[in-house]
Amino acid sequence: MSRGAVAIEPVEARRSCAEFDALPYRLYRDDPSWVAPLRSRESERWDPRRNPALRARRVGRFLARRDGRPVGRIAAVVDRGFSDRWEPASGFFGFFECERDPEAAVALLNAAERFLQQEGVRLVLGPINISFHNEVGLLVEGFDSSPMLLSPYNPPYYEGLLHDGKYAARTDYHAYLWTPASRHTEAVERILQRAQRGTEIRLRYVDRKRWEEECRTLHALYNGSFADVWGFVPMSWEEFQSEAESFRDFLRPELIILAEEGSDAVGFSVTLPDVNAALAGLQGRLLPFGWLRLLTRIPRIRTARHILLGVRPDHVARGVAARLAHATVESARAGNLARAELSLVHSANRPILHIIEAFGCAPIKTYRLYEKTIA
Image (cartoon, rainbow, N blue to C red; front, side):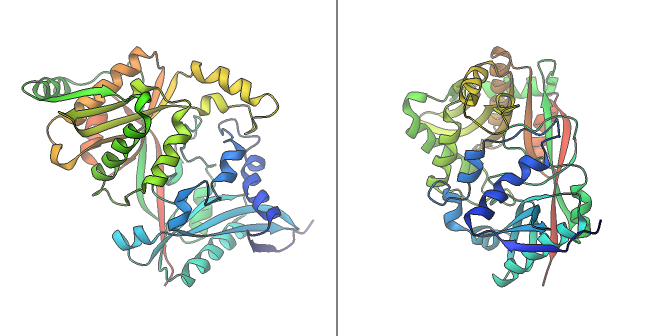
């Protein structure tokens, strides 16, 4: 039977918005590794009232159809903060999902490129889901385990679809695995001993009772610690607060650690329980009994994702990062975690990679960022 032509349409009407959100649940329903995110959370990502990240960015979304049926989707994003700071006249594509249909995939990529060209974009980077604060990269190695909280996931054939669209690799990010069997090197032990001698720096857990104050401290550290990391754009307080609230109900205070010198915060480490372990099998739905299953599973989660370790520039090379990493490992052991994933780590971030490897963690996944010049 012959197939109809691919039709691309902008996502504007209520029906197409719902189809855009629903497509991954159909594409991945037989994939044992995929974990369905909460459907309500996914739809909120496109509401500027609920997602402050949209307020400073221009976004266009598109669906690909064959014979009226959605077969793919994509979003195009203009982030002036990023282009002004790092890559002039650049833009992103993200939220890319597609059946094994090269024609539809190329049509979607071309639609995103046309949208971006109208905004003056000449260099397209992706996949990036709205910003570098969100999911970044295409999974290209490590398909044998389920994605952790807020980690990108896609089938292996997506790499070929991007090549069909003339996209080339720009840079890689990695995920590393820690287990209780991981052991740090003697060099780490020496660094820890030096860092603990004659220093005023102390470590403490985040205090839930002072939630907004602690969040403001973490917000300042986040923007200050990563300012020189390629791709980083300072996060607004509204956006940071919104993200923090989404984690509040299931975070464990002993896995969020602050380094302080006197009353001055100089570094931090954030590890979050892998709520994907609790979401598995719910198909993204909390009703009628999903809420109950989620609430009973969350306390039993024994996996986690370490997402951030930052030190203020004026305190780098003082052993603060090693102390934070060691304290995180000790909390993970005390909390009886079976495994933790450290991600995403830029392949060029040698200082952090040295620390991760010195703590006995091995690479398990690779995510690739792609680029294409469209001028």
